[in-house]
Length: 201
Image (cartoon, rainbow, N blue to C red; front, top):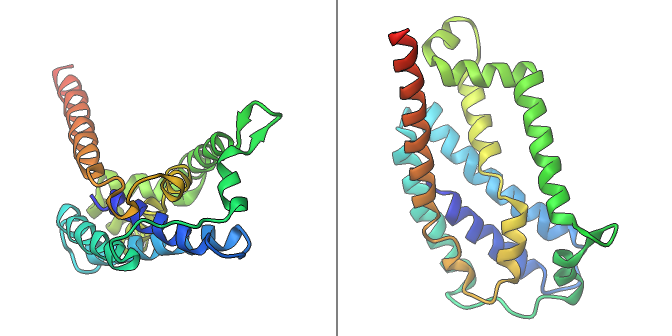
């Protein structure tokens, strides 16, 4: 639920740091660490505080959206350096956008971690049956916090687009939570359908 607010907040941070002569890596690292921090807060609230994920992320959605408004003072971010603006126009072999390449790399790394590592298998175990994973000796608290932290890392493509968008960044992705709800409902329906098929068989 808080993904849209995090993208808005990290976009503001990246844009503000992109106004000066700082190396391009600085806005990227600061924005990603801010998203990571919100993810850890969500994870601690769910794994340690035993709050429902929907309620926890709904709260951080509102809080981080307010933080984005406070950070930008409710005004558009302007004066971004030319070097920073060129990030969106970088091309590989003159044809493939570097943002698309980065996106593919992230997908490949995440797929490898989930499918080929012990951590990935433990993630699936916690998602499938939390109590069984706990009994099996898996540190479910750490796994859940790590998953929330990783999932709240802002999508760099959208973060960069937000930083250069000609709109109010604090309102960027304001309705993103609606997409998240629809995805959750769709996944639940798919899982329910597969379960019914197995039972019928």
